[in-house]
Image (cartoon, rainbow, N blue to C red):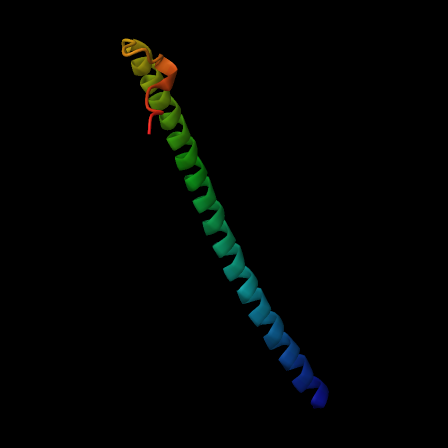
Length: 78
């Protein structure tokens, strides 16, 4: 009888572990999906930032030089 009780306890514990394992698998899948979404968003933002920088650089190149300052010192004055 004691052996049966011990086996029942082991069975119950294994079932709980299996449930926890399945929960962790679902959580891991959700987290992996979030990582993919955030990676895509980051890549998109980096691309937009690069395009914005290129536009700003193009606008800076179009600025006329004046007061003896070169184009490279624009925006660096304190």
